[in-house]
Length: 274
Length: 330
Image (cartoon, rainbow over the protein chains, first blue to last red):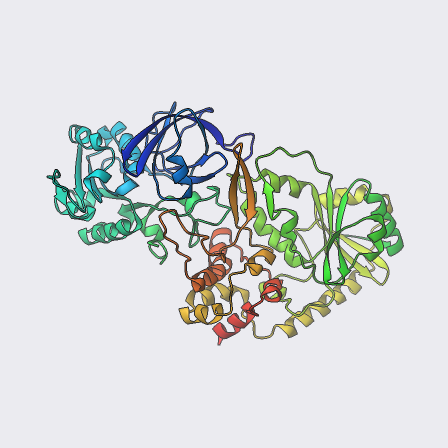
């Protein structure tokens, strides 16, 4: 989406709600002033006026175009400012950019989603998209891990998915508290519990780099082939246009050629887990 | 190819006339060496011909170090850049691939390209670090520029290389005369003598087709050894005609300022979570070579090095990429 043919111009979006998901994660609900749509897995550059912008994959359904939700962890300069914002202000949006999840190629298959931490944000958008095509899928399994029960975002999502035909959702935490009666361990431990026909399956991994690395290794051990694993890569996407160079990962611009890659496409690059 | 000739005095008068409708930058020899200057009528006779190579890379005319990319622009006066070495002309082709791609066309770059007439200057003689020929780039333009110029003992000969160049020539009364091909053998002799100089000066450099493999297979010891002398100053990338990485800086009113950046600076690839694939200096150092000789060729089918040698001249650690290649080829 380009404003007046200028690729650098953001469109304005009014912040209408801020939802606190966890102590360090908030969801920003935005209404763009111009028509705006995205494909699940694509990302946007979201800016705080005069402060800076950062790349985020929307966490809302790609089928909803009148508003947009972006879930943000307070982790750096721009996101600290974002966490101070109150409804009513305008934010800037550029994009959507990049290549999202090729969900049409998931038809007739079992979809395994492995997520960790704030990686559930893009996954939620993907889940909305998959729900809309569930008649064409065999089943969808979500395995999600967070550090503590308090860090687990979108808690109602899990019950809803478990009550949705063809969907299963599992949660685990690294460190339990007294109230937690679920699984304890890293996200990959949930993979031991599930039943899946690997040959007719694809896997999606999204989360912190260390989880992506060990998640991918575990999936390969389970028998997934390199081109059955989709990774959503996190790099320092600055322009989103395949020009500024900040997100280069080998010959790929993560912003333009990704951010979703199959493991097969990028496995030769030693930098992928950095 | 059309050839047009004109006496130097007449050419100078032509430039004076052109100054009424064009902004002209040309290479001028000053106390620091050769560089582009904004030409005023009094400077016309100072314009340097045939000499390699202005200190400033051509990219600077199209990608300023810093510019606001969200504010509206008034139409700028058309420009002529005179005296561009062919290495820079070839470097511009890669910039076109990056900034004029179908999906995300940069209007600021595009308007400047449209608005600018490129007059390439044949190099007669070479500078210490010139090695364009090693990258299959000749010291004179045959295409990609609009015109090519050579000064043969007081006679200016122009070769017309593009439609834009042809249209320009048609509009200049001094060039109404028949085209002149008598100079072809003289020009060819000059070209050949510069190529011979380049060949002699660069004996032992690897064939450009092999550079990618050499860099890809280089052990970490190479990067650690040479990066000891690197201070991450970014002089090599700033002066490079094909390095154009940038940073977008936000300003109030959702304005964005685009500023030249470089993978040689610490933090270039750092993400908010703290991961930084280029944290170590030798990794940043290696990154520049991988980008130029392995990744850009994969992505754009073109090496991101033109053999201009500016990075060797600019390095305060006296790191020569040619020295690295010589070691790799052993």
